[in-house]
Image (cartoon, rainbow, N blue to C red; front, side, top):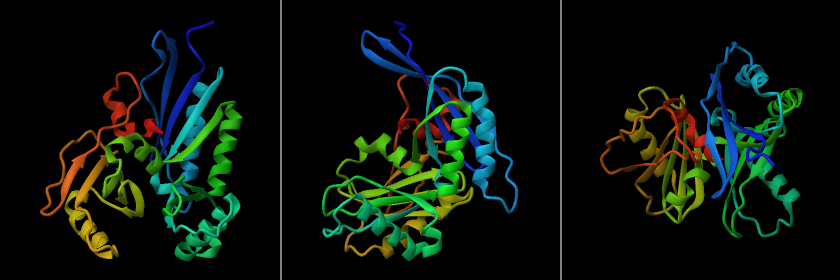
Length: 281
């Protein structure tokens, strides 16, 4: 039997580009090992008036032509640009997955409107009883089109994950039981979550520009003011999915901590670094 198993692709889908990391899986004396090959990057040609995910999926369809031969599994990480998030309160009277999703859709409808919420596919985080759950939503049309792209390429779409969850899973060990802010940066987007003893309390996504370091103080102060608790943590754990810049903001009264990228086993090149969090999903 070959020591090399079937191929794996980790894919980050953003509005402006699609990045594909081929992952080689090999059986060794120490068990299954995975190493990352150089990424394949395709730019997206966005057109005004058309949802940006359409350009991203067109770029993905083109990129997959290089990987369509042989058995390949794919995990897709969707940029937070394509996601909406809400916190779903605990309800003891809910008796199963169907009622859980129905209540989550109700929570989205309160924030975004009933018509919009009906067009989204929802996912709920798994949490302990009596703890609020994080729900994510993505356009059903986007997911259906993506499944069609992978089906046409003959590649198995194993998983589609929100970037927030993939990144958080990659650094969960650093945030275990902490009460702090988790800040995930993408080009043009900041996803900010408040954690209490490792559990989700609030999540917000905001548009940001190149001067995000200067704007971060105002954003954090505003979000802290909106919190109902009497004492809000001023620790911020920052995942920078934009660049390899390790410089942290310097803001009085806030303590920033850099989180390491969650790379797979093996060496990572400079091109891997910008979205290396995606590989932890």
